Amino acid sequence: MTFERIAIIGLGLLGGSIGLAVRDHLPGAVTTGYDADPATRTRAAERGLVGTVCDSAADAVREAQLVILCVPVGAMAEAAAEIAPALPAEALVSDVGSSKEAVAKALAAALPNNAVIPAHPVAGTERSGPDAGFATLFQQRWCIVTPPDGADPAKVTALSAFWEALGARVEIMDPAHHDLVLAVTSHLPHLIAYTIVGTADDLEGVTQSEVIKYSAGGFRDFTRIAASDPTMWRDVFLSNKDAVLDMLQRFTEDLTALQRAIRVGDGARLFDHFTRTRAIRRSIIEEGQDDARPDFGRSDHGS
Ligand SMILES: NC(=O)c1ccc[n+]([C@@H]2O[C@H](COP(=O)([O-])OP(=O)(O)OC[C@H]3O[C@@H](n4cnc5c(N)ncnc54)[C@H](O)[C@@H]3O)[C@@H](O)[C@H]2O)c1
Ligand SMILES: O=C(O)C(=O)C[C@]1(C(=O)O)C=C[C@@H](O)C=C1
Image (cartoon, rainbow, N blue to C red; front, side, top):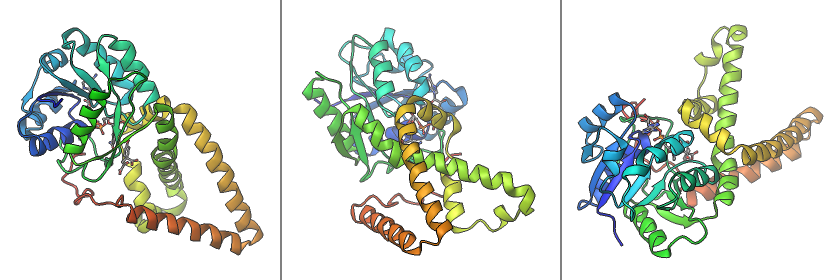
């Protein structure tokens, strides 16, 4: 089973990148798309993110074999409800949301007559909007597919093959496990970045703008993450609340242990900890998950 007619709902970073990657890697496929924001629809048409930008979500999915919802996780239910009346019975619906359990429930409830197989390409940048997408976003990145119990294996295989065609490596995972893993690898790091940049900003009055002036290296890396889309991340934290709170609790305990090591002058503990974390960075690079994206920090990729 291959998909020849693909509809993309939400034409920002993820939707735009999928459209461009399909154009490059699946040239026979016909793509349609829709975005709730009229200015985004105009820009998506100018950039050719999909073959046809439609005036409604219903028009975009009317002939689709695969529909991918690329909207913030808090808007998934609304987007699904909009496409429901026009969706062909045999169409497979998927998404790219950063949390999976809540999204899977919302999509299954809104689309009881269609096969729904949620997925999450673990690939992105801090940029958003129709200028942010680029065709190579998924190269060598993981895409985690989270089929519900009883999902048709042929459809799981077809969706996996779709992501592999776009350059991704596919892993099948239970949605609750996905949410726990991503809470520590993606969601908590964003919360920490949002916090530290806010803390530094609060200090600006005290430090007479020196925080921004001298912000090289470590702080600068945090500001990239903390520039990520506010709507997207609000929705991620609200939808993956339990796993994020669990990981935050563990993080706080570990931070307190390091705080104590500093207070009591336990250099051995600090050195051992930093040695362990340095090895993790090396294994990420060996695994091929370093920043392999071309110039993704450049200013010409979206807002
Ligand atoms: N940004 C990342 O790094 C990243 C990575 C992987 C997955 N994701 C997930 O991908 C999804 C999209 O994120 P993005 O980064 O592309 O965001 P984005 O802001 O670039 O694009 C989202 C688009 O959805 C549109 N939209 C909102 N509600 C809609 C609706 N009801 N119908 C149609 N369009 C609607 C918005 O106008 C916007 O253009 C989110 O669920 C996010 O969690 C993001
Ligand atoms: O590289 C970045 O800027 C990202 O934030 C990408 C990132 C991540 O945390 O790894 C962000 C959210 C996603 O759901 C997947 C990928």
